[in-house]
Image (cartoon, rainbow, N blue to C red; front, side):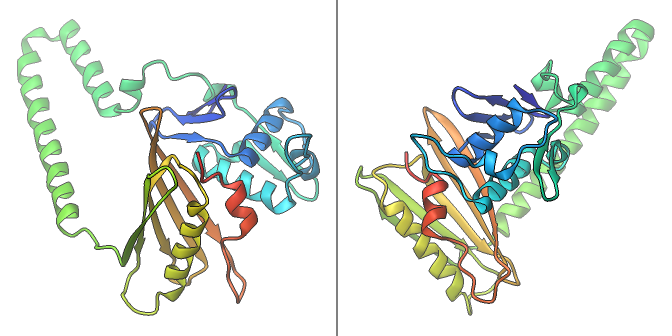
Length: 268
């Protein structure tokens, strides 16, 4: 099923961004919410319906449904997050614009619009101005070299000035797999909250026999109201990336609860 730039494989519970190549194996909450919204396109679906339990799973809380919708919107991206509409006091509704939901015909060109423009221009030159072709191709090649060179310099500069992590530690799961937790902070002072969150997340992973995630990157916003988590790993030979953004505006912040650790599917 095509959802904007993403392809949803219901049987595998897999959501793939066809532009970036990023893949997300949906946890139970996100998979259930998206499946029910798709089954009721353009209809309002109440939170209680989206979070209904069955013989295998307990019912999801309203906050779990809200968080699942937030995570789905984040993965769909700013261009398509409006597909999931919030109907105040009633629930959520999924809209699919057919014009924005067609499979991408040529992924290599779609992912590189600059190349597509060059190919169109060269085709036009062949048909209309064959004698000018060599001159134009030379100019385009020169511009492309300058562009690639500039990108290389920027990448090299970023690599040289790469920020060192504030803290890094690893744990070993029962299977012998290592999971590394890497925390980033703007300063090396007063980061007790970040360290505590890193240890709490590590404790959640410690209960796993194995996990598809090998590197966990953590950071707190300057006001300590947003906790950012990026998990990188590998499953069935494919690279996986998952981004989580947790918000807590209370005076005493927790971010991570036992229920959240269960629902987020840290283990294999």
